[in-house]
Image (cartoon, rainbow over all chains, first blue to last red; front, side, top):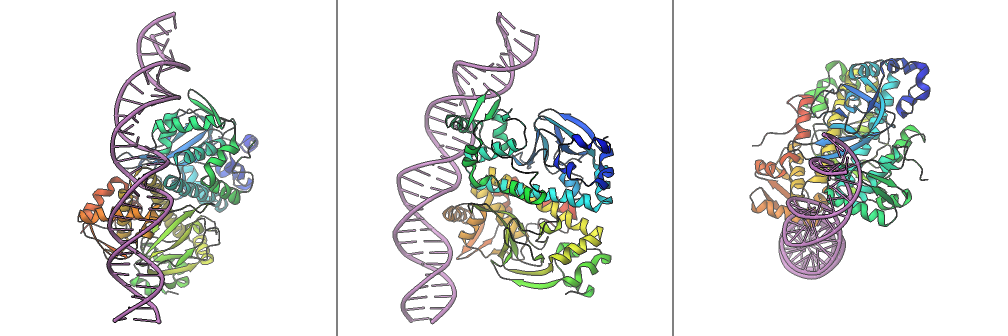
Length: 245
Length: 245
DNA sequence: CCGAGGCAGTACGGTTCCGTACCGAAATAG
DNA sequence: CTATTTCGGTACGGAACCGTACTGCCTCGG
């Protein structure tokens, strides 16, 4: 539960963008949550209990098929929300969603969210705009998966994670990066090693630090950037790609 | 323009699913269109003039990036509609959309569509349900692009096209199939040749006929089927995967 | 009926990435 | 402080697919 006066500390871009008149539909239903890495938000084929507006951390949306092939189809941070199907009138999760990098946020019960967007047209429009941004990200993930090389995809992933973090260090093992990208763990190791030798990142066991963001952007090329630019277009410059340091 | 009494001949699943009370928001604004292959419906970065409810034919939604990498991220036929961004409050096309297989349908001006979903809650819910189905398809395209082999992806594409056609013959060159899948033209040729030798398809210059759909489904494995099953779940058995013959 | 252009078949070296596996090093638990 | 687990580095053969290119055939327009 979060009263109107508590909005000041909010970092989530979607909550920030809620009009004052709409806040009462959402704020009182928000419940602060802190989530460790691998915390599960949605399970494929099961009902979605809550939507979550992240304040920090990064969530992964992972598509799964009947033979258990998996791949990440989207990344969500403080710029957005989980539970997109709820916005489209579906209460079942098609994909699995879990925290890839630990963080916190505010969750709202599925019913409360559906009620809110049923009451306020403006609120619904805001969330649907986010849905549009997320769809674009998924489409460009499909593009990268089909056309980009491993190094480009890894660079893209690191940049997307970095956009959603306050530090430059990604606390992830090669194994998990490999699962996200749908490639071999060993392939990730080699790629990271190459990045390191080029001075783009430094590594320690279980973590990786971006030291030359511009260089990583160069590796990713145009596979990174379009969804970020579109989010800016949809929401204004406050959201989207963070400037290189 | 299509009056209420003209609904009888409609084959488009979404138009069929419109409640009688809602028909007046849509029907009078519909304009019949016939479109050849490669007819352009939406151009990346430009405003979307119309949404289109297909009666026949297949449209491809193709994501493009700044360096002109392209790949198909979705297929639309008589089960759905083009112009998804309009439903989410965005009037710009992020992707290019064009007819891959010639067909006909009914189009509605962007303004009229937005007006209609603004007036009828039920109508909006219907179209958003389609949006959800389309998102699932895009996500599974990302999955297939990242994890499936060329033959599996080709099989998946043929099945998705077949679901949306009334004949078993796909009038496409290897070149265009290759563009959709984001692979070499020569790679498609070899894969089709393999299909042919296994008795799954027959080919002529510029066209390909499915003769053993079950066999093709076996090749695609679980990379095909999930979005189709979800569409069934969302809309009932009338839509979705067509039974094998 | 013939010429031009589009399309399919084939080839070949090269690259990327996979599947698998092994080992040492680093963190963690007891 | 030691034992156990997890993680990263490395290796190797092989499969999949690429980029490129050449050729012959089919189809359609004239």
